[in-house]
Image (cartoon, rainbow, N blue to C red):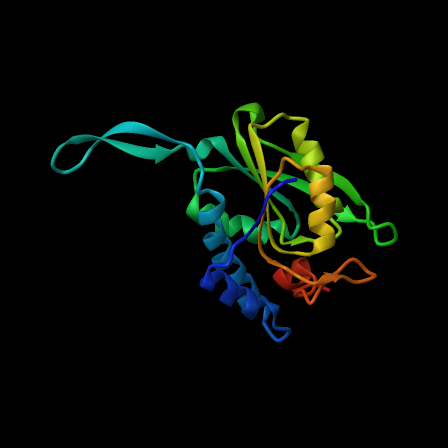
Length: 209
């Protein structure tokens, strides 16, 4: 089974609690999501490979360690994934970006693809898929299936919230893909929403209904 990493840093948990409040405005929700995503990026990129390069300090030449951000791809599941993407890019601004457009059929809850755009040479890159909610798991599973066709070096999945049903579905479909989240909530309701959750992340990011 894929590993599930719950990021329990106090700042992550504090900002998530503020986002959950129903009275949080669109502006504050969006700002908090960016801040929280930046914090999560530190954990998600903890094992990124590094290389030695020669640099000049004001005093002398030395070997220093750097990451190659151009080999990392953040893949946003539209549209709500864009909120996490912005925060992650503040930490790794050199990363490439891909987009997968998926919508959830309201009757079947199955993910339907309408857009797919990735950088070149995906077989040389590590991929981090971002989407605020891992609920039924259908969108995440479909996104990872499409990405695996391009044979990237590795894939991770990052979300704000998930639930036992979402984790189980993802682990069954993609046991090789680790999951990073700020919380595992209690359950799904009959409409496929996470409880207690924070509502529809896309609507709260963009101020829509």
